[in-house]
Image (tube, rainbow, N blue to C red):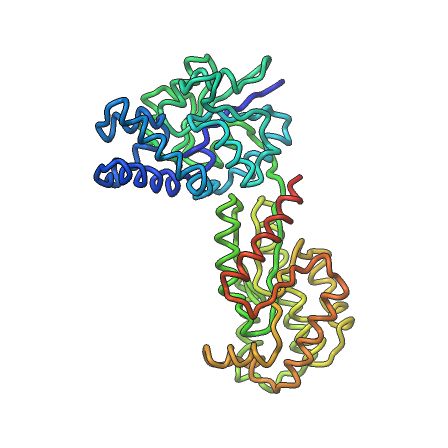
Length: 424
């Protein structure tokens, strides 16, 4: 059975208020109007701009035309990328395509803008049609939906967050889903007559693809010497991935779950300075074995991106190199713990051990591992370089002496490219 699913864009696929509101403010200022308040700005999400400027800001037709032109002046350069893909949307689109659905967009946004947004976020592969107002079609929602639909289908749905989407779908004679995570509300959508009200993206998946197994997610790790700036970069890359619609879960090693966190306390406590090197290595592996099975694999199976602060590479570097137990020996100890579960990409923040430890010592009290001699940290750095040489395709190596913003931009470009490539 051929199923067609047509989506609205703003408030349904993307969280677009940042760009829209900034452009409305820009247009108002340019035409000499007072800056609209938050309640007024909120109303601009969904309806056509001409309607909104007249209805919500009291402009006449001619002034509204000038406002739309000013709005698009900024939007075409900056505003359309001030946007976020809603969490779960990538998983929804991948599921629909896996099931052979026809997927389209019917939006009141000019078609060229909609296409640029979808392309920017790496979503083009999921859509068979993207329709917006243009030279040969107006902004009426039912007309846009008709144009977005395929010539033949057995079942069709319109998915949107405002009454205009529901009313347009009903006018065309297809079923409708009103989504509650966007810019409308449940009362508006139910009053408009939606067939299904979906409070979350998962509810949309359940309505359109009941019983579907989600496409798998991804496992990423971030590595570096203590003081290399991992915490800052975890926050920056998470923001970048979430802007593109990836559902990110953080974890860490050792730790990430109850058993592994208990082992972490033993490993890092300054009370345990008498711990033997082989005991230390085995405890790290034990914590990892629990973490892989309890946290990492379930998250990836659920379609999430698991971003882990350290993984097996840390053991190889710190115990194999720093403790001089040998790289291959630590890999062998960890083989049953990892059991084939490796990151699709590992971000390595590249900085020399002297600089990194100066940073770390200035930040807070050192733990048991950080208190080791300079020679230990030098061997750890050398072991990391050996790992990168062994598996250069997995590592994303970035110069960590740059500004956090420069590092974050480089990391985001490479990691997002790998994630999108894996979706193809």
